[in-house]
Length: 136
Ligand code: T46
Image (cartoon, rainbow, N blue to C red; front, side):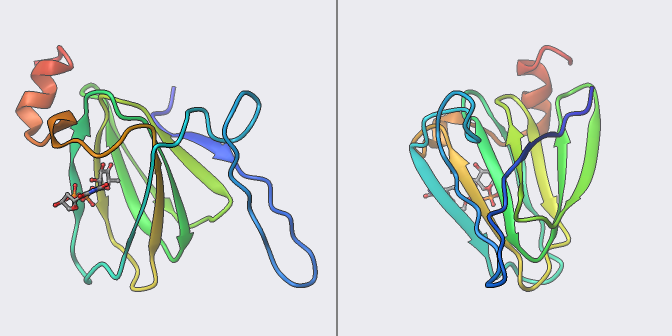
């Protein structure tokens, strides 16, 4: 099974353009209560971000403008995909190592998070991640 779990976001398009709504709840498109929203933008050319996992946090990432490449790694498998669609949400479960590369200059990555910010939830060392994921 792929590490990439996509949430198809309904586009409410008409001759004026597109609109996507994000709603929380059962049979809605965000599967957790959103406690935090942040967005990554103006990423310098050639810069990569991420290089960590979260112990508990779940997130949905949506590339609302431009593109970037997302790498996910669960300690057993590593996969990479180009994110470029504002109508696709990527569900990132806990205990998933993530890296982001190849940001276009117009990339805006919107992230919905299940928890408030907590540095204690981060695993920023890959060997620690492998140990805690029980694969080392
Ligand atoms: C993730 C990927 C996709 C805060 O103070 N509050 C916040 O809510 C966030 C997300 C970050 N920060 C501070 C912590 C750092 O001093 O902002 C700085 C940059 O964060 P970080 O280096 O963790 O950024 P990325 O782009 O490597 O990772 C971020 C998220 O932190 C992370 O949860 O999954 O985007």
